[in-house]
Image 1 (cartoon, rainbow, N blue to C red):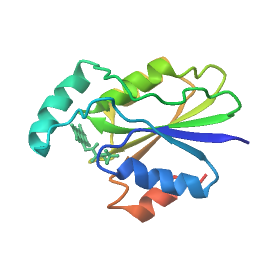
Image 2 (cartoon, rainbow, N blue to C red):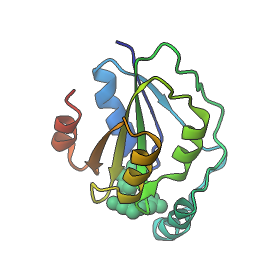
Image 3 (tube, rainbow, N blue to C red):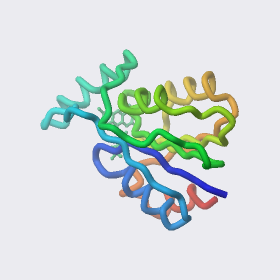
Image 4 (spheres, helix red, strand yellow):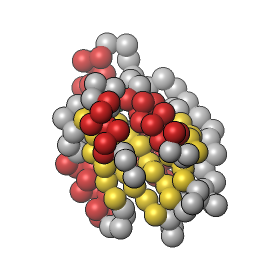
Length: 149
Ligand SMILES: Cc1cc2nc3c(=O)[nH]c(=O)nc-3n(C[C@H](O)[C@H](O)[C@H](O)COP(=O)(O)O)c2cc1C
């Protein structure tokens, strides 16, 4: 079974998840935005990027391999911004063809909940599984448990 984890991370929690999945023999791909999208002040960035997330912005990504042929299972990793997908995830989802794939969303957030993102996933990918994680770097054991496949 070929498995891929494709994800975005701004502050490293997604990278932590990636390392756990790498040990479970996932192939790993990280996406990055073409321009640095978050300003240096974290609270300011929460407001600006949180707003952009609420209107569904999709920033341009650096070139990445969006060919998922040959993978049976695809895990998509996204931080939660303003209860929604981080904006780079919006772009990623537009550029991936997930038809016929077994899809799992791995969502990492401060609270461990993701209301609006969950609603969107249920609507667009009704078959997809969702794993909600609270701050993976801070709660490594809980994270590993939830990712035990
Ligand atoms: C712009 C912004 C908005 C955020 N909004 C939320 C939110 O609505 N709910 C929440 O629980 N956490 C929120 N967070 C916290 C992140 O989802 C959380 O720290 C996550 O683990 C970050 O993943 P990363 O380190 O891979 O970027 C926000 C963080 C940022 C930067």
